[in-house]
Amino acid sequence: MSKRDYYEVLGVARTCSEADLKSAFRKSAMQWHPDRNPGDAAAELKFKELNEAYQCLSDAQKRAAYDRFGHAAFENGGGGGGGFGGDGFGASMSDIFEDLFGNMMGGGGRRAGGGSGRERGADLRYNLEITLDDAFKGKQAQIVVPTSISCEACTGSGAKPGSKPRVCGTCGGQGRVRAQQGFFAIERTCPSCQGRGQTIDDPCGACSGAGRVSRERTLSVNIPTGVEDGTRIRLAGEGEAGLRGGPAGDLYIFLSIKPHPFFQRDGADLYCRLPISMVQAALGDEVTVRTMDGGEAKVKVPEGTQSGRQFKLRGKGMPVLRSRDVGDLYLQAVVETPQSLTRRQRELLAEFEAESSSKTHPESAGFLSRMKDFFGNLSGA
Image (cartoon, rainbow, N blue to C red):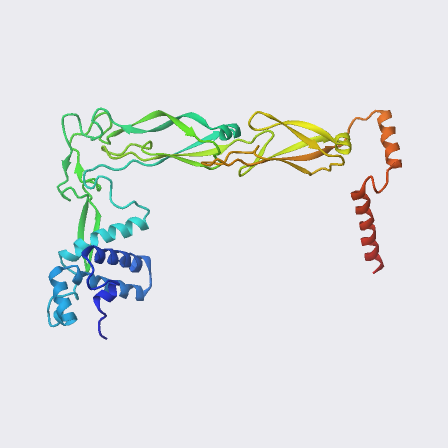
């Protein structure tokens, strides 16, 4: 079976640059790597074909020979792309494996600071509970965060003052060592320096060589207007200090909003129950209510208002985050049934009921009539 054209295998033009060639190989190798396609024989063959093509084309001399003679340039022991050993392939694959396995294991690629021994600090999470009023008006909150900060004694290096870390003799400061396994060049973390690229002979007494110490920090957090429950605020560089002078992580503040005694929130809109008496509902009235901004608004309750009817106050809801828009306030009428009646009040209500008709209570009268007809028809069926 004849071999496919190497440029076709990698999906690049014959005039592509070295950077384009490497980018195409990186993308394809990560897609077809056997570890991402366990048990897939076709993917394994595809991966081997990609390796062969890239080993040839990534070498300037081999690429020139291939461009002139094609696969025939490497037949009869010509030393071309059929093999997988050699320093060229090992070097070219190091970045690919780092991206591939780093992404698969949830890592972030190269270690911050390379082989300098500096490691980025961890990101931190802080849960902050605020009131609905805070979300409406915005707030400058003060929080105390237990975290790690750079050691002042050694300025974050981890070495005793007056001394310095030294380059690891095993990996030469790279933090990684390479081993050839068949046609793969596998890189792993240096066992001597644990990937830091440096070793400390005389660690700092204040931080025990870590370059950071545990402390509590007081931070000011700006809570903008319109934030919702679950909003995340990122404070760059306010997370855990990095090891041995590495960059600090970030602090993520997750907001939760306490329940309000009167208002319920749905996005930018607010909802509130409006209890009214039976007389107010029957005769109509004008009711004054308080709004979220601390002001007052008048609501006209029309004659014959039923429970569940909503009244909308435009622009009296919550502000929208990073916008000039404002939601609305919805008031839901709840007609209250009178309790603890006097004898005279009972007599008046009884008299009213005796004189009422279907026009006075159209919904209940219609409901009972329809129910009677419905079940009557069922029993006669």
